[in-house]
Image 1 (cartoon, rainbow over the protein chains, first blue to last red):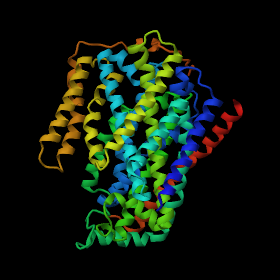
Image 2 (spheres, rainbow over the protein chains, first blue to last red):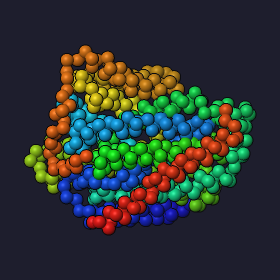
Image 3 (tube, rainbow over the protein chains, first blue to last red):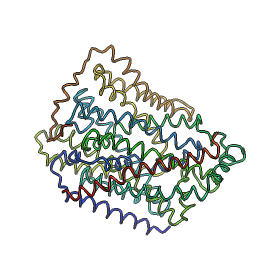
Image 4 (spheres, chains in turn purple, orange):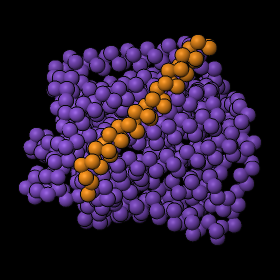
Length: 503
Length: 40
């Protein structure tokens, strides 16, 4: 397709999203730091549910799950879905507990500082910024590939401009602007799925799908031959689901964007409703639909690598072109990837903005800063981070997203056990927390670099990074003389004005 | 291994699940946006 269409899509959506952020900031003027980073703790549940849903729909939720459908058959999307949902069922009770025990907290690093002290808090700050930059960069890479492959727009332009759009609207309107834009993007993604899925199912038919998949199962000459393609208990698919848990655990628990959204709800009841509906009801079916309807439809049509598509990652765009023709199908695909990447990037950047505004500026750079100065710094750092992410995304052209994602699991899973234990268990000391994090990181990286089998190094590395710290925390804490008094968190006063409603 | 009937129930069932999720968000979201814009 002509690159003019691609530039037109970029220009139209830049105008819409930046326009919305300008309108939101005029309609709801930002009154202080809490308003800027936590939307004044007054956002109703459905807006948060929409925002959480689209923030967790990554470019890989569509393209990667479709690919999983091609690799593992009918169990691929399901394993992606439950694997990436589990961390939210750790996160939801955890953030509700945080809200109850430390009502005036905004960032997870504020909690870590009170619980484990300044050093551990700074380590978590680095991990928190790391996960945000990595996830945002990955979205830029995905969008850049989509615009480049469909419209022929230079990869660097397709990756950098969407990152710039997100950066402008987050720095302008803070978390509230991000949430309002997420809602618009929720409607676009939902509409494409609602219309496209039945069209594909009707076009191929359940009998066509079944017969095609039966051929994949029974015919050794089928290009995608897989005896487990119609099995819900595929061992390889299950292993993929377990790895998804490890990879997603750090990406959820260390992403301040999810804490900011949880804190911005009007009450704990709204928080619970928003996150359960946003994840379990609205998000969880998306990768299953992508895996089943995009991925296994490609299998059923007898299409495979070298026969209709070059790579299995092209399963989703192949099916959209199959239904809508190469013109409209391509536009639909790019829109989905564009919206998915922008919302996830927005969530990350809003989180980074909160971390720097609340935890960094006043504590490290200017101890006497006013809230206005804190927000001004938050805006400037958001722009600086956006530029860094844009440059990183441009430099990562040609790097495998799947490999990056699996490697990131090792790095970001390691601190999660210390964080979870710190939330509930008074005996876990700062020394145990630090030891568990670095032992998990070292063991995971050692496995990745030393195990020669490329089918096992990533799996063992991820398992060690998540479970070794858990073992150290569980075995070490009972012998610790340390005892933390959770009651003192109730009286925690942040450096900025926070008004908390009685619940 | 899934039968053809089970496959149909599985695929259409997940679609119905998605429809429920979208409706559970979309309707209250429209109402909430309207309320926010009117109230302020």
